[in-house]
Length: 88
Image 1 (cartoon, rainbow, N blue to C red):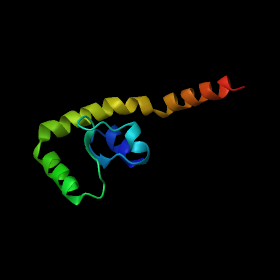
Image 2: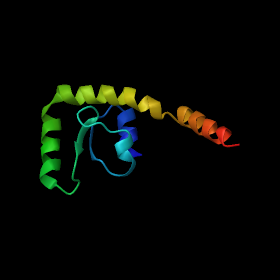
Image 3: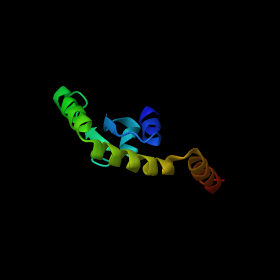
Image 4: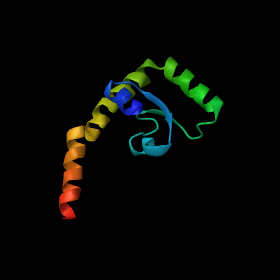
């Protein structure tokens, strides 16, 4: 949930494609997505790049605030309701 909360707050992400994160993270749009979460060098480079580029951070933050709207709880509940009604 923490990455979703960060996105809703307009923050850029530095994360990796693990578990459900791959459903809403887009490398270069939401921030940096590390391919190997065990690669300390790659993580370090992402942090340095993110810290140095205020324009990129702001763009990711704006993108994240728009992107996260499709994961709104009301939309999720409506989608699940339709699924349940379709299997009656």
